[in-house]
Image 1 (cartoon, rainbow, N blue to C red):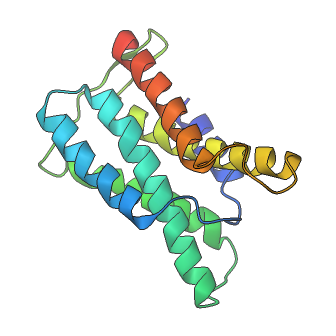
Image 2: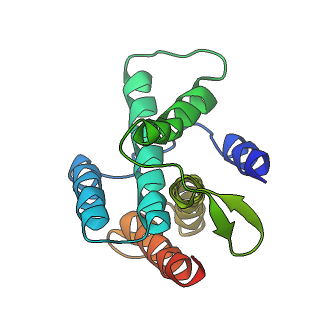
Length: 165
């Protein structure tokens, strides 16, 4: 199952079309993750938001590389996988690897599962926003749509994870 999630994320790692979020939002999410973990929010929910943050940092890295015209074969997939894979560093003394049953389907660490889901959700909602914008003549349906869309989806999945885990 984990291989399927990695394969799906690789298929959706395409060139960044637009800047997915602002730098202030990126920093706020990063600070919020630490606060949430200290307040006792489940690891799966923290991982969900961490995965979205890491995917966002991957997009920022791609935009940085585009500005410097750094292009090479497989760049987008390599950068996105490297950014999301950095969640593995939390297992080096900060967090114990604690696999549990995920909704009775398979066994995996909730933080790792949440991270993979969060990255995939962020990438898919970014693609969905681009599609919706294109269908609307190149304009958003309402102000801050590209921010609201992933946040609402992540909030709904956070609620689902809090019930499921």
